[in-house]
Structures are given as structure tokens and as C-alpha cells.
Length: 351
Ligand code: NAI
Ligand code: MG
Image (cartoon, rainbow, N blue to C red):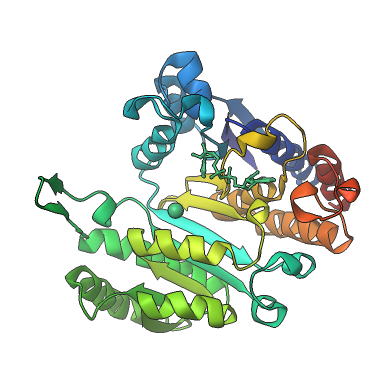
């Protein structure tokens, strides 16, 4: 298979974890005889420094000509006092909007060897394998805003089309996972939620192999902590998804191992670790590359439909943890920690 991938290393540890993930990608390419052509471009603070623009035209152009995007992270203290339009995170918001990446996928899967770091009891966290599907380009974050000294408002708007497409993504995912979909809303008070719920009900006849439940967001907030193992695919709107995906991300205990994808209907997608640019450890060669390596696995699975290759990366990562190899963020005894490159070598050796 021949694919073009735009690589956006970004800031802080971004370039380090991306370099590690690209090494794994190249090993997969060789092993399974694929041709992945990589092009590098600037985003975030690095792009502000070089082009005075957090998402330069050249970067957009390269992304448009490719099949998927791999991103590190953006931001850092250097740009914290910049004016609003010259802030690194604007690059991220703009790239999602430019490419209409409306479906944000955040899988949370427990690695048994990492569960000591979970704030939950081992028996509660150990069977977690869920996926939050968050609508990313609509709803209250993008609605009309107004503010005076005495009043403020944010409008929450969802069109049928916007709901249908995200719900379709979620059903399709549930179908190839454990066949369970939980749609999260606040239908007891919000009209947008009532339309959302109605559309999920309409859609479910097309997916007879998927069981559907509707849950109110406040109830899901509790159940994610008391019984996270209950969930398979969880689909929800932009704001609820923002909150629930962050809540779910702490279940397994380690920010450094959580990948994400933001995709659209034609399977074009942006893949990035959930964590940020960790400026305090940037350049030290000790960042955990697992989240970015697992983001590459998601790219292979969701943009390229390379299921075996994706599963192989996930198996390798899991196996390296099981063998007791960790980067510094995951071990108490820092003398035992592997560097970014050493840990990546273990994953590569496993493939
Ligand atoms: P952060 O995720 O960068 O770091 C939080 C904590 O986790 C820090 O202690 C950091 O050292 C550690 N950490 C994160 N990823 C790690 C990894 N791969 N290996 C080892 N340790 C890791 O979040 P924080 O500190 O709130 O933000 C730092 C910068 O990143 C800010 O400029 C923020 O705006 C930006 N950021 C960017 C995001 C993105 O590009 N998607 C997301 C979140 C924050
Ligand atoms: Mg958030």
C-alpha cells in the first residue's frame, strides 16, 4: 500500500515522541511491504517562530495532499504571552476546522502492568477498554456568543446532518468492537439532546448487531468512575465529550499512553497523543513515546484500514510493558527507566 503522511512534530517533546513513532511506522512499512511517504511541516509555536503563523498555508497544502496527519503536540511557556491569534493552540483548532475533522476518538484501555498508577482500584480499572467518540466541530463551542456587563450567552446548535454523521461513526465502531453503544445526552432538559436521542433511535435499525443505551451525562460521569468496564463505545456532543474524555483519561493512570484520532467520513484523519508538549522535560530524551506510537496504530487502523499492522503495534507496546520496561514517567525508581529511544527499541524488537 502507498500512502502519504504529513508529519507535524510541533513543540516541546512533540518532535521527540514523533521521531520515535515514525521509527515504528517505518519498521511496520518494511515488515508488511508498504510505502509510506513522509513530509514534514510546521505547526504551533515552531510555526509561529518560523512563519509568524501557527498554521501556515504551506502546512495546510501539504496536509491536503496527504492521506493522514501525524501530530506531536503544541505550546509552551515561550508563547504563553503571545496575542490570541499568535498562540500555538490556534494551529490545532484551525487544522481540525479546516479539514472538518468532526469525529474525535479517544480510546482508553487498561494496561495491566500500569494499573498501580490508576486512581481507581485495580479490580475496577483492569477490564476497561472503551472509546469515547466526541463530536468535535459543532455545538456550543462554535455557537453564537454574546456578552454584556449584565448578561452572557453561548448558543448550542446541532443540525441533523452533524448528528447523523457522528452517530454513524460511533455505530460503525461499536459494530467492529464489542457491539455496545452508549449515547450520552441531557435529554431531560436540552432540545439539542432530544434531537440527538431521536437520531440515535432512527439509526439503530441500520445496525442490528449493536445494542444501544441512552444515558444522561451526569449519570455517565459517575458510572465512568464506579464501573468503567461497562462501556464499549460512548458517543456524545462536543462539550460533554470534552469533559468525559478527560475524565476517562485518568482511569488507566498514565497520560503518556493515551492516543487519539480526529477523523471525517472519508477516513482522512489527524492522529496525536492526548498529552501536551511537556516543556519541562523537552529535549531530555526521556518522554514516553507510547501515546504517539499508539496514535500511529490508530492511523493504520482508521485511515488505512490496516488492521493487522495496527494490532501488531498495540500488541508490541503491551508486551514491552508486560516485560517490565518503562520510561521515567511510569516508574518510581528512575534508575530503572528507559529513555525514549531505548523504550522505542524494545517496541521495535518486539515487532
Ligand atoms: P502536558 O500533557 O504537556 O503535561 C502534563 C504532565 O504530564 C507534565 O508533568 C508532563 O511532564 C507529563 N507528560 C505529558 N506527556 C508526557 C510524556 N509523553 N512523557 C512523559 N511525561 C509526560 O500538559 P500541560 O503541562 O498542561 O501543558 C504543557 C503545554 O502543552 C502547554 O503549553 C499546553 O498548552 C500544551 N498542550 C498541548 C496539547 C496538544 O498539543 N494537544 C494538549 C495539552 C496541552
Ligand atoms: Mg479538554
